[in-house]
Length: 539
Image (cartoon, rainbow, N blue to C red; front, side, top):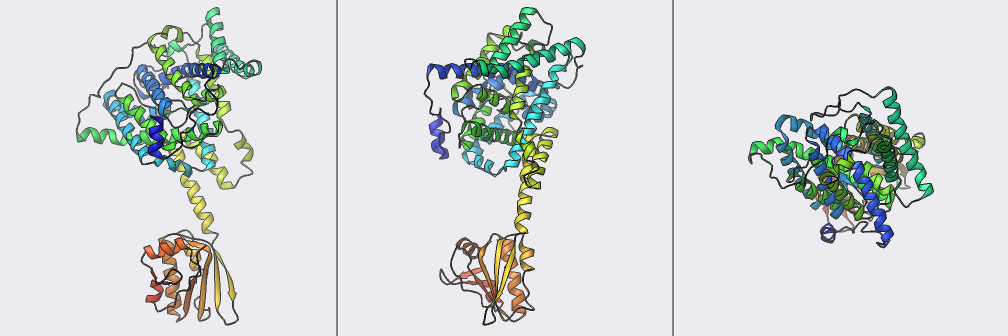
């Protein structure tokens, strides 16, 4: 399947399994890493199910199915996918208004949209996300992960587990709070120390295991996984969403499906890039889009809430040594085992251990170096980093990325708009030459027009574009405007050194009549009676 997808997309099989052979040692590391991820997935899936207003098993089934399919055919081995908060906050209004069956239908449509995006190779547009936006995304998501863990510091049984969110409940205080904090700190200390002692066991798994043994052996009264909800269930079964197949249903689910598809792909592709930076892998964006789409389409037919890549669990996997598809597959299968067979044991795990793991993920995910470079990078880049971080925390990831890209694009356009200028030279025969520098496009068109002095210039004026580029229709209009002014002054204007792509743009616009490859005549200028020509060659 992976090779077939790669053939369709024309992309490399990203990170197929790296250069390391699948030795028993490598397989052991992958399986242990998958077990660690599966343990961390349980409270997240349950919590996000509560946020979306659905039964915990709906979140757990999504984590299993989405995680398994993306691990098998996704664009980046090492990535972990499942139910996420970014999608859950969009789903809650749909579930509250129309019910869970409409959610399943929406997830199916969401998956179809994502498959289409992958087949159309829309994944390549993730390259347009600037590095400051990536830094803001990482920092914002780290803060979101941190804030999400704070709900575990509430009194068990007081959270709103009725399916309308996790926002209620009383905070722990006194001895229970101090005990919870101590166990969190102990888990973090074990994760920090363990790699210095041995790498035979992933540090996060060791932290969870040791703290769980201490809590169970001593009978400590602390919040546990079972306090969130029971995770016991059977195998997910095929289920066609029970919604009317008519236009009214499409009108309800399509807006949600589009938003969910966009958020899911953005978070998945940004996570893909982040994991790629850590593992030295590239490519696979469109393949990841299709994998996410297939996973969500299947999930919708098996009673899951859908999902996308999870940066926190992906970081746990990579830092635990997971580098191949085995880890992701193992995580999904372990999660299914927890649901079907081992729920009584998993429900005994203290939440403090899982919170400690996620806190270490926060520390490892946050781009601390971005704080050091804020004063060194251009002011606009520093502003974008802070803006994307704030919007990610206050709203959602998709909004933050769109805002960051738009601000970066506007800043880039303004910067290029201010670069347009011209060196003026008067030859012995009295001809004035304007050597234009900088791109000529919508942002610099007005500045370009202001460079010239039709009234004061001599009878023959040459505009040399050797160091410039004509980019868009606004640039053509600016040249039209200059040509008209020189025609009104009964003066001759010549254009030189238009690049081949500029030449093609003018021709396509119908503003350039080409007599030969080396002698285009600017048609608008000709209509004005102005002699325009002498293309000196491309650059």
